[in-house]
Length: 85
Image (cartoon, rainbow, N blue to C red; front, side):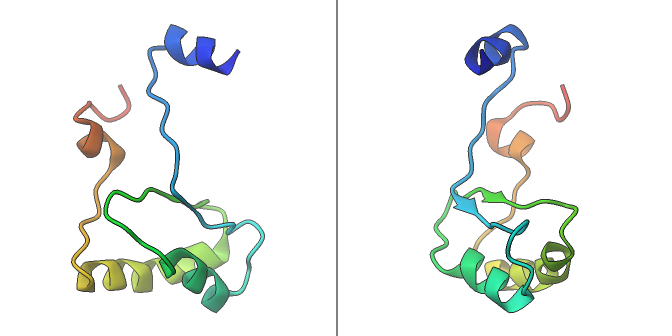
């Protein structure tokens, strides 16, 4: 049913390669350690905007990613599609 809804709505299914478990991990240090353990180019992070620990670690995560030479891109840029089409 999900595949049919995606086709019917002409959506693009996108998965993540780094699942943060931020709805379960409330400790900021543990969350940061989990998501920074094995980062590779092209990784897609799954975060939830309702988790306080996520909001708190984002500045440090962005700083580390940039320091390590990674670029942060929106999905619409990566897929070369209009945002919110």
